Length: 101
Image 1 (tube, one colour):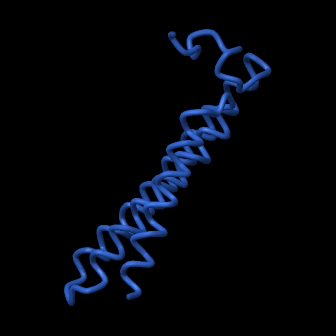
Image 2: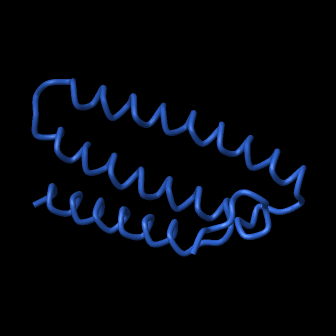
């Protein structure tokens, strides 16, 4: 019963993160939404490995969480540099980041 709750929560987090990443204009909102999506996937992987006795799945989840935090650090530093140069993190106002329609 608990695994189903984790899978449902994982799917809900992934859906909310994907929706937020697709509709947000701000790069910061898109970054937060992508992290929610990533954490939903990690929660699903953790729910899959919880029934196993081996530690391989848990090591993979810990590695992906560490990698995700490094990714956030790099992306936040890029966003700070974009804001310093263009005074905006709106993807429609920064040259080269606009969406092609």
